[in-house]
Length: 115
Image 1: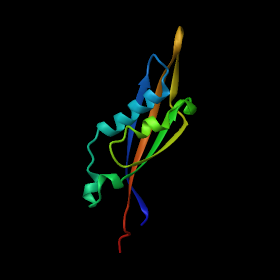
Image 2 (image 1 turned 90 degrees about the vertical axis):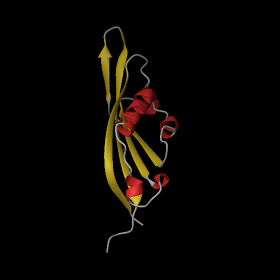
Image 3 (image 1 turned 135 degrees about the vertical axis):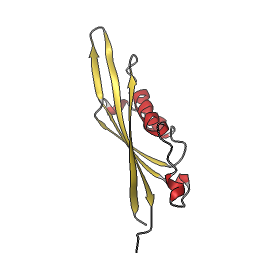
């Protein structure tokens, strides 16, 4: 069955003092997930575990994100995490920069093509 993208949710997260890119990404994931209550799988007669979750994370330092920690944040579904250059580091005069992460989570299901 072909993967069919059904929706995309967006989130933003920050680490204001610790310059923690993983925490900023986690906050962005939670922002995208918990702002909405989507019963998408059930609408198609599928289990929540069948949802394919393509997670695009943008941060200034992609190598500083712990992908396993991000995956653990998902209560169900099959997350595929992709960390890319993006987000924003906001300079501060007397401290490390504030870190901003952006996230897009696209939800897909394997669906039979319509006849």
